[in-house]
Length: 292
Figure (tube, rainbow, N blue to C red):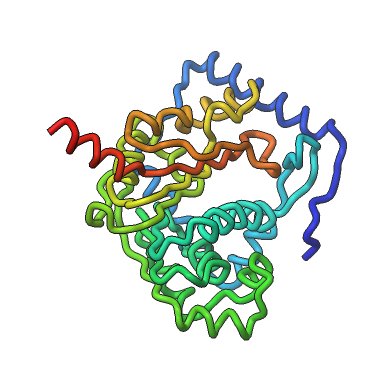
């Protein structure tokens, strides 16, 4: 698989923007409003992870191409290249902060956790929470029978070393809802999500609050934050019924913002943005003591 996305004409980018406008007009004429519920999301992802767990679809699905933007220029990129780019951002943050325990909210088929466990070997404990039962099953199956081809491509770790490192890592996956995480307060040093809040347009602040509750030190969210979207991307996100939150929404919950950046590699229809936060638990405890 080639590692570098291939450049294409701006025409393809503008074609997607035109389709976004046409979709908006059709919705307006038909008076249709998008709706998104957690139960609908669960059913959707139950089907998705079941499909991805069959045969070699993990590799095939990850190598499907999409029109994307690389530093603002249109390219054709594989989904696995996009995933690799995002995982590297999480890995850089984790290796810099040196947490001992890490939780992924919305861990899907577990590929993100498996790759990060290889890229961040100092972490002692990894956990993934997933709403769809088939996602949890797929993740546990991949833990037993590693998808070596995909993991090796994303991490650049040899297949022999992958098996050895994963065997020595403490990794667990369980079913759970991001609005009511089945974890103790301050159980993890680092919590992260990757394209998960999009599914909770009306309740994402509750999910952020739960992330803040269970993390002791830091959190990172790679999501479609409003500040990273152009006008066409904002319209597309609204058409799909995804969340339309500002990265500043984390501050009233108790997070302190350490870094916010729009990803260099994004899809044309929406821009993923990396937000790194501090939980600020120590300062909050000190404030409580001072007020007391």
